[in-house]
Image 1 (cartoon, helix red, strand yellow):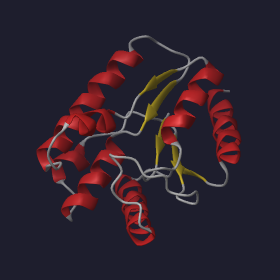
Image 2 (cartoon, rainbow, N blue to C red):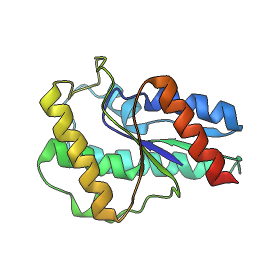
Image 3 (cartoon, rainbow, N blue to C red):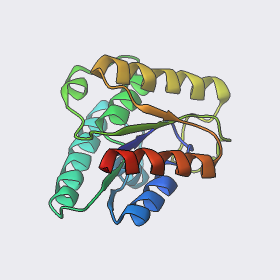
Length: 167
């Protein structure tokens, strides 16, 4: 399963909690690690490298055959990031499939918490980015389960969706 959503909606925290709850393995957000190591602005080529790095990490984690593989974002978000940053949906990224069979989209209805890597915390930018994420799901024909509310509410809803999916 994959957690998607704009910055600061609790994806990383929730990924760890869900993996612990279900005995799963987390594939961390590769883009965050990649971006933290850069000393320059992101380019479109970087988004391709992020997509490849995440794919490799997800394949390695899947090879462990965990009861649940929790991806902290995937190609859907990488494509949405490229669209947000460069103004158009990039064809090669858009052609790459998501491996997940359960998509949870965390809504931007919690306060933004800034950090050195986050870029789009202003309410208008956050709303625009969320609209791009929704459009990317629609373009891929994926209907995510939308989850909002407090962090506790998010965890309860996500755990319920996973339990139902695994049943």
